Amino acid sequence: MVLIIALNLLVYANTLKVPFQFDDVRFIEKNKYILEPLDINSLFETYFLRGIVRWSYAVNHLIGEFNVIGYHMVNLSVHIIISVLFFIVLRNLYLNSRWNLPLLAALLFSLHPVQIESVTYLMSRSGLLATFFYLLAFYFFINSTQNFPGNKTKTVVFLITALICFLLGLGSKLTIVTLPIMLIIYLFVININKISVLSVARQYKWLLVGVLAAFTLFLIRKAFFTKNGLFGVSGMAIEQYGRWGYFMTEVKAFYSYYLKLLLLPINFNVNPDFPFSSSLWHTICLLTLALFGLFYLVKYSKKLPLLIFSTLWIFVTLSPTSSFIPLNDLVAEHRIYLPSLGFFIAISLAIVHPRRLPEMLKIVSVLTLVILFSILTVQRNSVWNSAISLWEDAVKKSPHHVRSYLNLGRAYYYEKMFHKAITAYEKANNINNFYFESHYNLGTIYYELENLDKAVKEFSTALQLDENLSEAYINLGNIYMDKKEYETAINMFKSAIHRQAICSVCFRNIAIIYYYHLKDYKKAMFYFKQTLRLDPEQKQKQEIQSIIGSLDTS
Image (tube, rainbow, N blue to C red; front, side):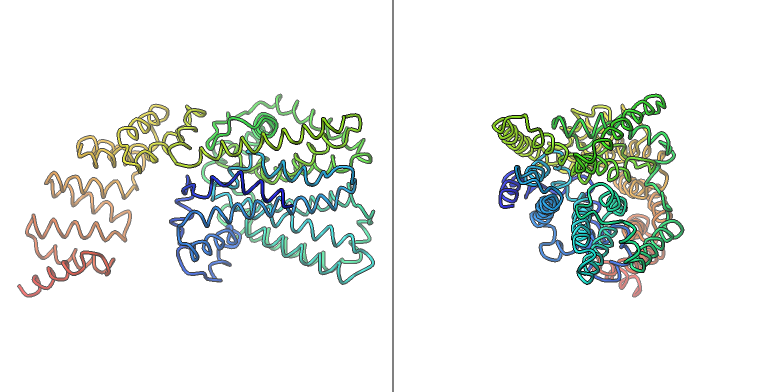
C-alpha cells in the first residue's frame, strides 16, 4: 500500500497547480450551490444531481475558496484511496499467494495515463466518488458473505453499510446503478464461501424487500418527476444520434477507442472527434465476436473465475454511458475509470497466471509497465498545466472539432492573445458557421480592439443564431452608445431587458443616455430608480442617488 501511495504522489505531483479547465469554471467557480454556505436542504434538493459531489466542492470552497491546490489534493486523495481499496478487495478475491496480483493490478490501474482525465480534471470528481462508493459497497458485501450464516449481526451490519455506500454513490454519479448486477455476478461466478444465493435471499428477505422498495421509489422518481425521465439524455443527444445509432457507435468505441487507449496508452485527447457509426452489420459482427469470447470464458470459468468476473465487470460498468442512453459526447476518457478496474485484473492475471513464463520475465514485464505508465502519466499531466497547452493539443488531434477551437480561442482571449484568439474562432467558423459562441466571442474581441464595425457584425450574426442572447444586445447597446447612436442603443438595451428582466446595467445605461445625452429627465429618473431597485448595492449607488436627489429637488 505504501508503494501505491508513494508512486501516485510522485506521478501526480505536477498537477496540484493545474488551473480550472473546461467545465470546471462553469460548474465550480460559478456554481451557486458551491458559493453559498453549506446547507443540508440544498444537498437533498440536488442529491440525485450529484449532490454529494457538489457538497465536496462546497467544502473545498469553504476551506480554501478557489485555490486549485485544495481541489486537486481531494481528487488525488480519492484516487489513491480507490487504488488502495482496489488492492484490499482483490486480496479478498485472489487467494493465490505466489504472486501479489492485487498489488500489481492496483499499481497498473492507478498509474495508467488513461486515468488522468478522472484525476486531474476536477469536474471528473463525480466518477471518482462513484467508484469509491462502488468499491466500498462491494467490499462490505464480500465481508457480509464471509460472515454468513454464522455471525448474523455482522452480516446485517455489513449489508446495511454496503447499502449506505450505494446510496452515497447515487448522490455522486448514477453509474453506480450497475452495482447490484455485479454483486449477483460475484455470487454466481466467484463466491469464495460457496454460499447459496437462495439461502441468502430467504435469510434476509425483509432487508432485500426494503432495498428493492427504495430502489423502485428512486426509479419512479427519476422516471416521472425529473425533466429527462428514467433514460433521459442531456442536450440534443437523442435527436442527434438516436438510441440505436448511439449503441452501434458505442460498440465500435469499445474496441477502437477504450480498449485501444488501455492497451496502447498514447494520443490522449480531452476532446476526441470520434466518428458516429450506424453500420448494423459491423455491430452484429462485433457483438457475435464478443459473445463467442464470453462463451469461451464461461467454459473455463471454474479454472479462472476471476477472469470472467473481470471481463463482465468491464462490460457491465461501462453500460450506463455506452449503451442505449445517448450522451452529448460519444466517447470520453473519464468514462473508462470504473470499467478499467476489470481490465487491470485481467492484465494482471495474464502476467501472473501462466506458469511456463519465467519469473524473471514476469518481473521485467511488471517493472517495464510501471515505469512506462509513470513516465507517460507525468508527460500527459504536463499538457494540463495551462488551458492553452491543453487545447492546442486537442486542436492538433481533433482538427475538425469546433469545440476544440472554441476553447482554444477562449484560452487565448483570457491571456490577452487577441489575434491568436481571432484565428481560432475563425477556424471554428470555417468548420461550422452556425455556432453563436464563436461569433459572440469574436464580437467581444473586436470591441476590445475598438474595431466597432466588425464587432457589430459579429454580435448581429450571433443574434441571428440565438435571438435570446441578451449579452449580445448589451454589447451592441454599449457600441451604439460609443457611436452616439443613442436611440439605437436604447432599443438594444430594451431588447436585452425583454430577454433578461433582471438587467440593472441595461436600466442604468438607458438612464445615462436620457440624463446626459437626450436630456429627458423624467425618463432618466424612472430608469435610475429601476436600476437601484434591481441592484441596490452597485458601485454607482451614491452617484445615482445624488442624481435622483437633484432631479427630485428640481
